[in-house]
Length: 214
Image (cartoon, rainbow, N blue to C red; front, side, top):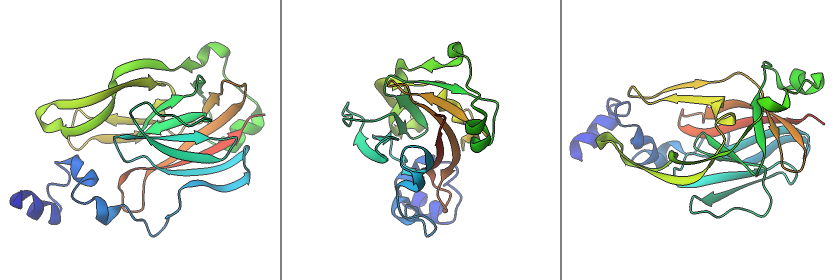
């Protein structure tokens, strides 16, 4: 433990042990001077256009986003859900509330929304049930022991950030594309992941642009 702490402070083992960002250094980096508020920001009209800033850094929590109500609620991974929600984020994993998602060729969310160009219906992907994607305990990662939760997962919308764990540290590649979410009640919402870390480069702090297509 003594060796780890010294190495982290000198900046050497932080790259070798990603769990440090969620443990030893968590209290240092969680507060960003640039952004301290979470939830719906820069909202023109609460259900049509704006920015959502969330803290999805915890492996044991989902952030449930309700675009109609302009709320972002954080709950544990044990199966609780709020009464109303459209999509949820766990780290970078996503799921929808019986909705579907598709990727577009657009990189500008306003251009996408104003075009009215929505992918064909068969391009939209439903959530799938999984037991090997939603990681809830990474403490045994170095020994190959990762604990996963059984939960729904949307593989299409989750393409907004690719995390390659074949190397250490993992390689993060953000998609510049706009995604379309079709909600269960028929709304169509354009989404774009603008950032996946805070000002201190701690992963899991996500800035999401959204705009109604209707």
